[in-house]
Amino acid sequence: MRDESMQKYKIPSGSISPKKNTKKSKQKSHGITYLLIILCILLLGIVLSITVFFHIEEITVIGSTVYQAEEIIEVSGIEKGDNLWLTDIDKNKDKMTRLLPYIESCEFKRKLPGQVIIEINEAQPMCIVQTDIGYAVLSEQAKVLEHVSQIPEGLPIMVGLTILDADPGNIILTDNEDDILLINQLMSAMYETGITDVTSIDLSDTIDISFYCSERFRIDVGTSNDIEVKLKSAKMAIERLDENDTGRIDVTINGRVSFVPLHPGESIYKNSNIQNIQSSQAASDSSSQNPDNNVSGDPVPDNNESAAQTPEDNSSAEQSIDNDQSNIDSQPAVTE
Image 1 (cartoon, rainbow, N blue to C red):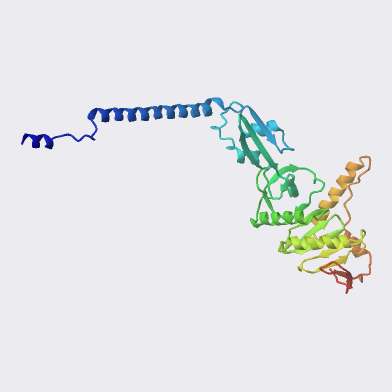
Image 2 (cartoon, rainbow, N blue to C red; image 1 turned 180 degrees about the vertical axis):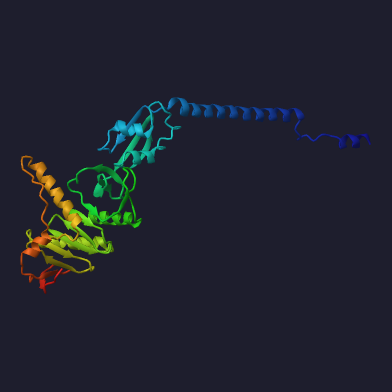
């Protein structure tokens, strides 16, 4: 019986003693503690590197030809000594495009160890509109870039818009919200087709839009539908006409181009406001180029009145220009 009792309570030879369990538990606890200490040191190093070691030491402006770098940096609100990572470097992006209108868009980049790069995409002047205080220069997106007292050379003037507000740095405000999209379409089409010498655009009637090229041609495009195709056709027609030709190019019907020569004494302008603006600008240019000339200030005679006083033979033919621009055929005369 005693032997059986001893066998019953005999401890197996493979079991672990309580002392060994306690030792392993302590080792595991120490390992976790060391790991936490290492993580805390790493975290402290990261925080210190971000908040203490990386400061803005240099601010570089790229792509600006209109504004000085100092002016752009001042409006951006970025200062040397600010933290490179904690500073919201593009917080004043909208403010910059508004206060500095010739900035179309801008990007901010960080570069180690302590540099901020401001990349400027400048707005390009595309056209002008007349306002109560002179003229407003617009970008392709109809953003007002600046106000000027004279029509800048090389920029067409848009006539027929009712301007409500033309604050520099903002999109121009008219009485018709569709005007902005129309301006975008026309400016984009002019840029894509590369048509040159456009001095004015008549938007008095948006279903009867006309482009004026110097004082030689009036391009009637009708609506803005397929405007790029129409202007491309008109450009090809101008390239095929003689350098002394002047008159009206009709591309209102997509796929058909016709040219109506201008009779002596006639005016290509259907809008007297455009004619007055062009005549005034021509007189201003002439006066600036020849300051010694005596400008009498007499009113400019109306070419239409001159045409009425001078009998002319209106039998000249309308010329129809094929789509492939391969030939010009004479067609029966038309009366405008």
